[in-house]
Image (cartoon, rainbow over all chains, first blue to last red):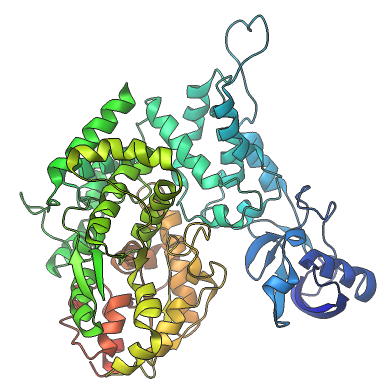
Length: 320
Length: 291
């Protein structure tokens, strides 16, 4: 048998009390106990006022996502013995980026609203086939990854961009968007990608990998966002800073093997960006941090010819 | 030890002081840097959105160059190590994919067989040099200096690719700071994103991210921050005046590159370590360590 020492976030809007933490010593848990098992024991044996969501206890329903020691996890998939082998305190808090209803229960509206925004359904175009729609097996295997989402909200909880910008569609909805847009049966790919390329869409992801790390089902939302970006570029949706950032980055590396960080922002975001940032650029140049933009001031790798050959071969191959 | 050295674009571009400091500390640590002068950019997770196979092929070329030297590949950038390890995992585990990439690579006289060890100077200090050895080399301990580590995303996540430090509760930077005599400052934002990658697309969110972490480090009493990632350094130092404006708070937080912090403790001068290139002056920090 093991023990769990829990420090649990408590908040009840119906009382005047500010949010605070309560600690619980949970004894006589089986060796394989999860954080959820410990919380259930708190609710049943120690403090019946503790509010939380849970259902299947098997990492299927997605109800019991909490922040455990600062990171979103399914309570039922997180073992006490792994997290606290020597009885260390385990801190359990509600998910981030969501309004707290009570204790560990959060409003999921932000999750569902964003999911609705990406239109998570397939729309076919043209006459339906005589028999069923067919999708290559390899494509379905690839789409299985975003399909594995159990909508627990862990990725939305820990999304670093959403924390600062409520317009961002966030990882779960964008992963679902790829599940639709990546499906060969979907006939309105460009229309969907046009919407997804707007402010708050695919180009606002900072690629911090938090969503990849916290997802309990290996959906790897960030990887799905990168695939949406690739599709948007292939569809010619390149009249935005995000796509220009990628295209000029690739062009710069193909030219010398080394990214020219001085020119990239100007090419991607325009001369307006350069004017706005002139002050800091001049200061950094005077300090010898940034090299002046003079001809020949950008270095090349010694095998630049081979870099150019690889680029030509693979970009040409992709166009075919 | 000898390593195949991959400085990356930023350490030779907008953060030249990082490459400079690394070149200065390496001989003192007994690390011989064999620079991969022919190796291209890793794609930084940006190029991957246009042509992921192209990014993997560039990285296969870099990995092949290290393999030809029979040396581990050492980066000084969180983003570089993340991208190289991701490509390395795919290329080393998937024979069919490796053959596809090698078919392109071979025309340039290279072939990658898989399995090169891709590391970062942070992990070289801990795993190869050893913290006891590092401690023994300290000439000017960073006593009285409260240092807030800022990891950067790719050096920790995802664990399935990195697998060196615990992404939820990393300790590498703290252990190096302690070995150098400094006091690590703990704060939530140390493993979060600096915001740099969306600086062009969504500057306000980008700067708010940086400002929040710098502000938190300041509130916890940090004299300075230290990062193993030059991209983080750009948002935390180069852009700090703009960040301060966006968050409405004068931050004035010096941000050191990891090799600069090591160099100070090894007794190198601020000039040798390129401190004059910083946007936010580190004078206060330098005075505290008597540099």
